[in-house]
Length: 133
Ligand code: THU
Image (cartoon, rainbow, N blue to C red; front, side, top):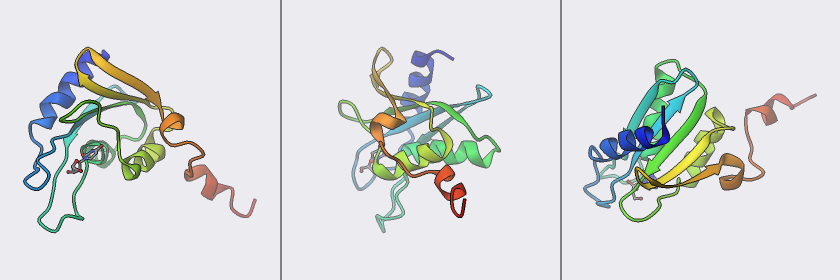
């Protein structure tokens, strides 16, 4: 799938954002290893802390359908370039250490990062495997 197509899917998903408290709409689309695509939006709560970011909505949809490895993730927000929060960076670390992270404003205006750039010196699954070795 081309990057602009993945961005279009994230932009479409952004329209479903449930954001009565922040009014800040975010959409995401993940491209998995098998080329399947899952989309997500942010979902807020009157109790605030249960809020789920668009990225995690998309990733958790993919994982719960049995997919595991993220090839690319697109994030689109309401204003300028919207970068993933720290929690989402850690979730991307779990399933997409080598993923392309695409921060988009529109279908043809985007920036591309590696996870290492956004979450340097990260802690991940391999660190637990090293225990007692
Ligand atoms: N949000 C996301 O969905 N993804 C991000 O990358 C940044 C923040 C959401 C959470 C909340 O619903 C709103 O944006 C304002 O923080």
